[in-house]
Image (cartoon, rainbow, N blue to C red):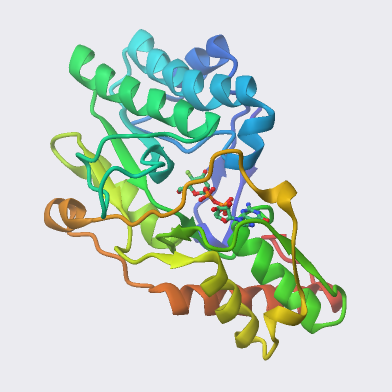
Length: 294
Ligand code: G4F
């Protein structure tokens, strides 16, 4: 029997969690055949860019071949499922034009990004070869209080909360001058859903069309808590990547035109909401309150 879960974010509707693994093609085929989904969102990956340099083969197996295994499961079982592939702005890497659009050539700079390029093209290929309703969302960085703690935004906001309450003194980071187009994950998930509601599948850049450095994020986050980042920051070259992506900025005009989607939460508000959430989370933890998002 598969476990049934509920989550306050999803209202009263329970959801079913089925076990599976993107490295296990036969289990995926069985699951897809059993569930008969109408929509499949492939958000699974080894998604940490720095880590992908340490485990390139695993990253390729899950992030690239995993997408193929899911597409094959849909094709082989013949279910009428629409498919969403979580493609990434990292595919633009050493960007060939500014801002990046759906037609900007890819120049991946990490094993992760190379794997995502494969997953992007295999999604296009299954659309063209087999007529699948398969779409790529080329999402630029999307953040929220639920972001994993090893990604730079959450690493900073979590450190701000801990430094403010005296639990931590220093924050160790790598490259501060890298620039990213940072949006609010909650809004980006809506864009994914819109893609699968279209009559025709397609590929869409989802971004804010603004670029900010890690340093800017750092400054805003620390000042939100009344702290001076210079007193707490140490740089550590272990967090540098052998090949860095210096600057990303996305043009979401196609998504606005065809999906009616545009970002609402801008950079300063995103930083604030993440800092505030981590300060609140730490307070709740210290008061012994249980939280479902821990
Ligand atoms: O937060 P990051 O690790 O995100 P990155 O590499 O841009 O990738 C994220 O966004 C992509 C686009 O949506 C996704 F495809 C991908 O899966 C992931 O979610 O790093 C952002 C920047 C980089 O330039 C990095 O070098 O921050 C720099 N940075 C500086 N110090 C650091 C650190 N990154 C991390 N993770 N940790 C540091 O200490």
